[in-house]
Length: 256
Image 1 (tube, rainbow, N blue to C red):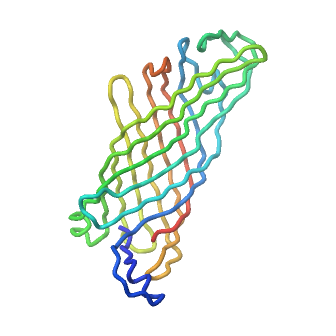
Image 2 (image 1 turned 135 degrees about the vertical axis):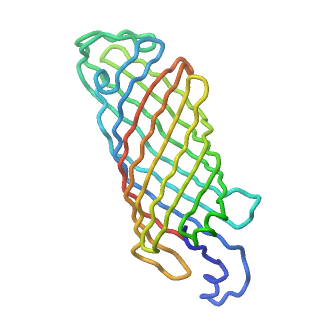
């Protein structure tokens, strides 16, 4: 568990002696390698992301902000954004229908798939676990809403077709952090939901190292992690998909 920082203590360093609530938080950014696989379907045939669309691995980025406070009835908040898009070019080895267009064998196509994430997580800590473990273990439970900005397009020199959907997805959230010593910690987070023929799971684990600490102010950290996502859609706006994304990443930020 991260140390709790008193704003009063921090401000007193500058001669201010007014009590304000305790709080803690995080601001960070990361660099991520995204490896897609699976298929997408829009009105017509299932299209393989690798074999048909020739989508390659991409590098991207994400931002994260986390705010916690001591008021028991109010949830804490995590805000996240992740950029995720893939493109490919190749010659078709089979014909398929995508939307209202038929793409034929030997056609040269350009393809594009976007799955940008916008996340808002409301959560509560389980304080009795922290007390029972002397602050070594921290557990968070809550709800996450992910707005998924989805787009898939296929085009040749003469025809093109695009499928789009912006979908808010509610998900259950659980976070765990183990901090055996102040220098490093192990974090894991999971978000997921399944209903009808749809499901979406997002798991990540991270090793955080905190090499720089400014007493009563901030900690600087660097992290090395791995994220796995799987999205299954069954006919939302005529779109179906089963997409897996493997994502090793590095991150850095401030804990306050």
